[in-house]
Image 1 (cartoon, one colour):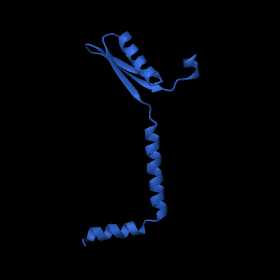
Image 2 (cartoon, rainbow, N blue to C red):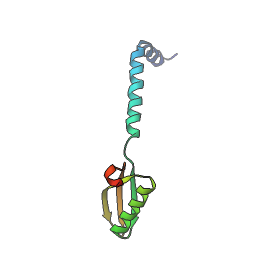
Image 3 (spheres, one colour):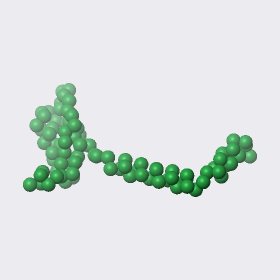
Image 4 (tube, helix red, strand yellow):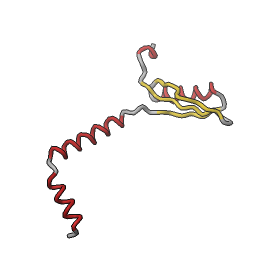
Length: 92
């Protein structure tokens, strides 16, 4: 068996189970926090109004509210928005 494999195995044997459990917990919590990142939607249109209407329709399909993050113009309007939960004020 090559020396580097023996070295790796000896290091792995010395690692306590607490360290392994800690690593598993850190990885799991990281994955959970990344899954709660807000979803973004995009739309392209010929005018700002038509593009915002498309964003509004996409958000309504998913039962969410939206906040426009930005828009830019090149022969067309490109818009990006972040979906947010519908607040009680928006529902009324």
